Image 1: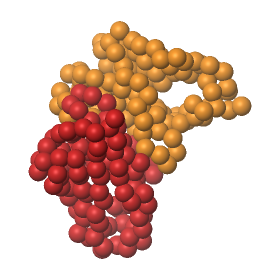
Image 2 (image 1 turned 120 degrees about the vertical axis):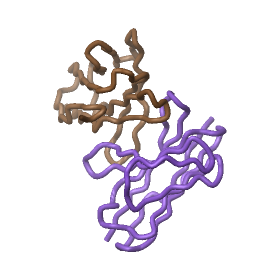
Image 3 (image 1 turned 45 degrees about the vertical axis):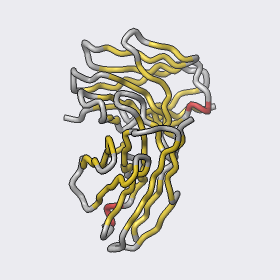
Image 4 (image 1 turned 60 degrees about the vertical axis):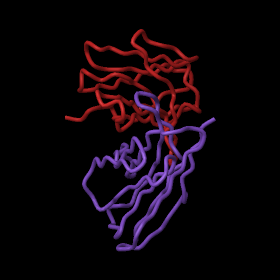
Length: 111
Length: 110
C-alpha cells in the first residue's frame, strides 16, 4: 500500500533563516506531488505541484521554492523565512483526477 | 470569485441530529468532487467521493447538482466523533489541480 512521510512534525525557525521540508512517498510510481499551506483557521492554499521529476508548477508567488530530485521525493525550501511563512505545511500525493492523500504535516512557527 | 465556497459554520448540533452542508463551485467544467474531513491540527483525510448519481456510505450521503453547481454532504444520526471540519474539494479541467473549500466546522454536542 502507499504511504507518505513528511518531516519534521514541528519546526521553530527565526526570521531570515533557511527552510527545508522533505516529503517522500512509498508504494507508487510517478505520483503527482503537492505542497499546501494552511494558515490557522483557514483553508488549504496550493503552493506547488509536480507531475514528474524536475517538473514544478508554482501557484503562488512567494519566497518559497520546491524541487523534485527523485520520483517520490518532494522538497519545499526557502532561503530566508518571513513571519508570514508560519503555518501548517502539508505534502500530498495523488494521481490525476483521483483523491489526494496527505502526510501528517509540518507545523512551522517563525519567531 | 473563489473556485469553491463553503459556509464556515460552525454548525452546532446535538447527538443524533441530521445535518447537511453545501458547497458551491464556480467552474462548470469541474470533473470530480470529494469530501474530506479534517480534525483539529491534523491533516485532511478523504471522507468520500461524490458521484453524479449520488452515493451513500453508512450515515453519510453525498450528492452532486451540476445544474446549480453545488455538492452536498448529509450526515445522519450525528455522533460526537463527527465533530471536525469538512472540506469540499473540486477538480477542474486541469486534472492535476485540486481546489479546496475553506471548510465547514461541525460541533456535535452531547
